[in-house]
Amino acid sequence: MTTLAEAITAVDTDQYVNEPDGRPLPQSSAPAIIESLLRLADIQNGHRVCEVGTGSGYSTKIAATVVGPTGAVVSVEVDPAVAARAETKLADTPQVTVMCGDGGLGAPDAAPFDRLIAWTTPRVIPAPWVRQMRDGGVIVTPVKVAPVAMANLTVRMTVTGGQPATVHVHEGSFVDLTPSAADQRVPAFYLDATADTGGDIPAWLSAPAVRDNGAAAARLLDGLMNHATTMTTEAASFPVLVAALAAARPHQLATAYTGHTRGIGYATPDSIAVATPEGILSYGTSETRDALVADLPAADATLADYTAATAPDDDGWTVAVTGRSQ
Image 1: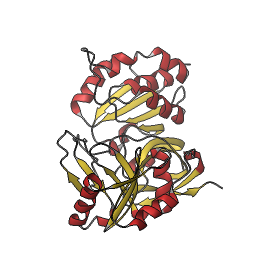
Image 2: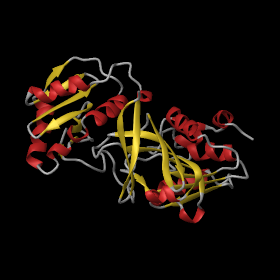
Image 3: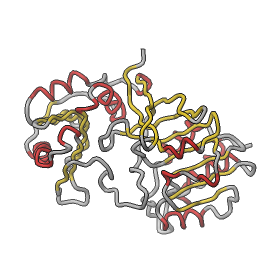
Image 4: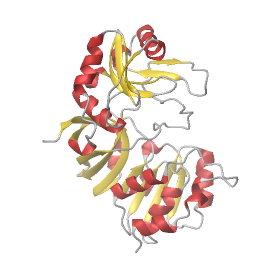
């Protein structure tokens, strides 16, 4: 039997994440992030694993090495070209099957699974994933914890009796899960305004407070880009900010990318304030900024301080941060 640590050492990272000319494959995640999520999944020898988002095939190879010849890894990739490349890379690993299709559907013909691990972010935990798990199986995936772009955290969820039983939040976020390959220079869901920055990536705003008011959304984004004031503050990490603010005021939550920095905070129809690595950017009335300042977690806060819960949804299960651990 091969341990995860041994598998990580044995797999040639460059063979998977780099092209022959040395360029990194765009569909690659940092090896350290891949390894952290694989540890969360606790894959064991003999397990049947469903992987959503094959990408370079690096994570697939590691998982296959751990499950060994008595296990199986079924990897679902939405992009046909990426799937074909990974299938070639993994041709010498018979316990791996690469499928091209909508990862949100899982792999029903190969179920049930002991583990499901996703390298893409669904809006909710898809119902097919839960249905395809063995009793006591574990799902590890990023997921949205509010209907806001990039309000994502990774969850480790145990499935018992066909239902989510326990859920814990961790750091981790990937591109949005879509039913077909998509250009994801900007988030795929919940964008309320975009603006040209003169570069490859447009600025964008996501805020339920202006979801039905395009003019207000455009005004807030322009305010952040061109007229914002800055307050210096020491902020927690972005994942902790997601947890803290989604728990405190989920209906006011807002995220934005201004063309040079990303932020998360609160918005109303006439004001916005977001915490960024440079400090708090705010535009409009001071009340929104003051509310954000009041709800900022301590700089040394961790995700272990927060709890989460699932709730049934038409498409599966939503995940919401419910507050701080007691």
